[in-house]
Length: 393
Image 1 (cartoon, helix red, strand yellow):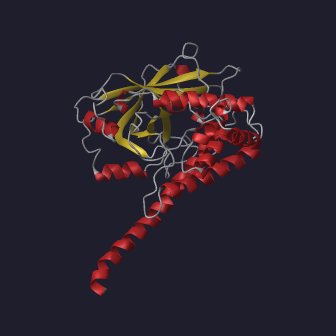
Image 2 (image 1 turned 30 degrees about the vertical axis):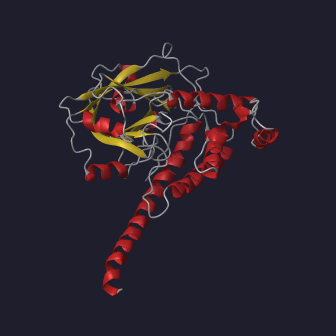
Image 3 (image 1 turned 90 degrees about the horizontal axis):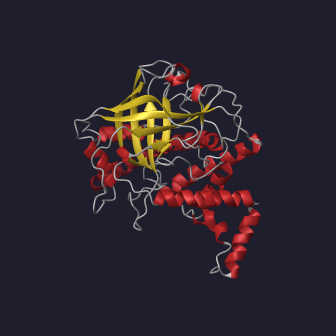
């Protein structure tokens, strides 16, 4: 892995880079610790985020022939140019689990696109290649606004066996059912974390977004619109958020009556048996104004009426692809590493959450790779011992 220089970004406002760097390091270290607790040896270590895959699918990423000259920047420089791509659909939950919880709650869904061989030099090369990754979720904003909030979340997950409930505890201070002892504990936490009114407001925003996610029913990952949520550069003088929207709907479009724990993977597999190609529009929202863009707050929403999405490329999934359930395809899918920093400099990730993602995604991918090698060796040794034991006693 080689890192190249990123562009100087006039849109970012990092008031204390040294302090933020320390916080990001702690999140990365705690992420590795969480992975080890989620996947004790000899279990295979999965991704730190989006560990559950609904399938990886081959696609073509084609720049629109009629793309405006003002939009011909970075990956989008050459109208009509086609790139091979790979798409991974997933759940955002940190642990593996059913696609709908026992309480009937839904989760955030992900779409990660790897566009191969985009030319130039990526900010972080992808196993020696210059690829462009686009990572998205099916909500237009992230639930967690910045590094400070994500650090507190990670600390809480690390202390409480992956339960995030304590993150929202400050919102319960006005709950009349709380005992005096509980109020004192929460107040002590608020004081220890030095939480102010703005922090509490962001926690409330997070809770609102989480509730929206839990209420968002999904029948088929191929029928969702996905969003970058966080901002990225679009050249030196503009900022973009991007989105992928299906051109049409594919079957199945309705939730099954009794959904299986893996019904979303079943839906993708069933959709890929069709002979009809599946298309998505790749779109960008652009801003260059000097006003408040919410660059450092990944929970901020850009008004689509004011900043409409513009179509710049088309994604085509050639069907059928009946081999997505093969062991070889699953292994290839699992081996892929995605990060928003697999990117051309012209599309550099910006803002607090994206700066955090750089180190955390790298730490997660490296640990997953290292532990995979170690645990394969452990597993082989265990197999050999089980074979030799009957022979030698």
